[in-house]
Amino acid sequence: VRHRLVQKSVPNELVFVGELPSGPNGGFNPKMDHLVCFLSGTLALGATKGLTKKQAMENNMLNFKDLENLKLAEDLAKTCFEMYSVTSTGLAPEIAYFHTK
Image (cartoon, rainbow, N blue to C red):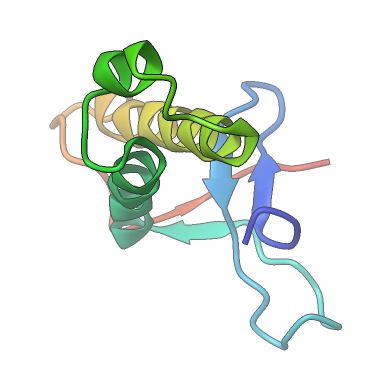
């Protein structure tokens, strides 16, 4: 996921998970379904082993891979927050398309 599907939007640099509708050799589609927002929580829980970030860090439980996953989780959560905050209703769209290079 990290190497093939995660990209940043232009110019806001929002991290999102796109799609490869034709498989790994096809073109990238900068489309993210709202359900991808659950991935940020899943990554965070996996990285911290279900503890808070503070507890996991105090107990030296986070290795480099965990820190990478936690950063991705935080970045995705920020993107999901922004999807809510930019609408007049405060509701996020079911599907969002991002501008990329």
